[in-house]
Length: 92
Image (cartoon, rainbow, N blue to C red; front, side, top):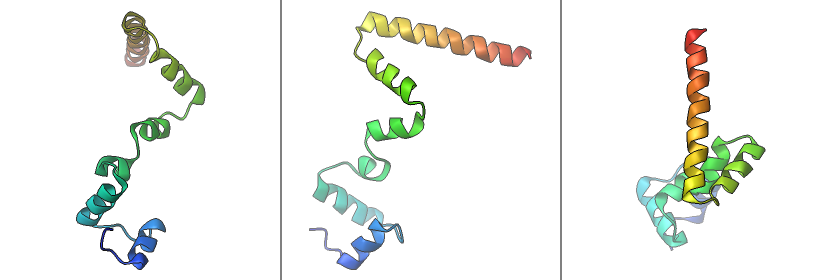
């Protein structure tokens, strides 16, 4: 489908080499995904990779299910907490 020999695909899969941008685009098109998601993973995978704390990740997922007003309140609390910690660090 992408006009690349199976040997090259095998090398990509084993992380021995990386495809060119043109080949990456062909692979993404064949898989019907964006090149960003092919290269970096889905948005969910990116978040999961960045958030190592499973409990915190679950809390953020639950917060996303709240109404807009509640989400705004949670953001305000987090901003206030982080601001306080930053200020304490600067004063120390």
